[in-house]
Length: 321
Ligand code: DGY
Image (cartoon, rainbow, N blue to C red; front, side):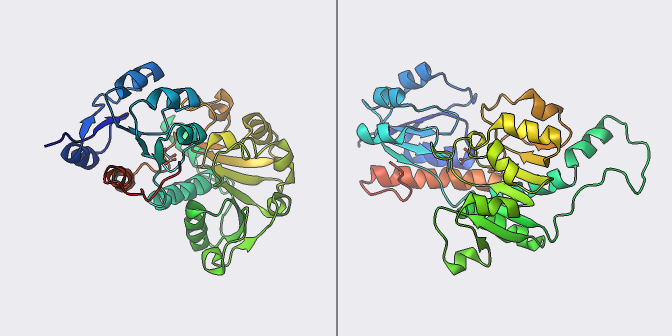
């Protein structure tokens, strides 16, 4: 009987996912969940036909070239693929897949948490209590901003953006969006389309970033865009840190142009700008968008379905290169 394909699994995964990997493949698991250096990754990949990767691996053109001797497929455990040089993968004939759809609910839930946390000063309140400094209640104590009835601008009404819109409607928000192209009426579900950011931003009392990190969107949210927002707007980002010019955001949070920001992602994760942690008007989480038990299992199974397809000689459902 021929041996099952060997899969280099870069990070520790949920038990059910590792169970299926062990049942169907020869996995090289990472029980300690150690972050491999690029050199280690390349050395370990010499014995593997597949890589089960996450966004914590930086699969540059150079790395792709070195993987190409043995690796046939990179099944990503992520929807974002900005950590992979897709053009290089294509050039070397490496198939790359991702995990769309399955993390939309979890990420949208977290986006609502960012919206509510930033609007209602949740981080500040939490810190006050934990520091045992809360000493009285008064009508003017820690007033935040209500989300009900406000306009939410969404940049990128893809799968996650659409679920955010649906959840935000439940909070009585009016949805506006910008996309490269307008969606059909069913997917718009009443959201108002703006064909430019110049048109969307002045309407966005709240703004949620949901576009992918590509060369076109890097630093998209910069000082010029911030100036177009209404004064005191609230901004949340659960997409990728690279979309934001962090210097510009910090300056706007300091001046009050932006009342508050809810952030789950940062340019140089896990390093976070000291200013974000020092400002009172930030609500910060450590890249937890899809971090639920249900979604982690679903991401793993989706990545495995893609892997199974490749080794069965079929086209994987979520091929991106
Ligand atoms: C994704 O799937 O892109 C999440 O950010 C986790 O990597």
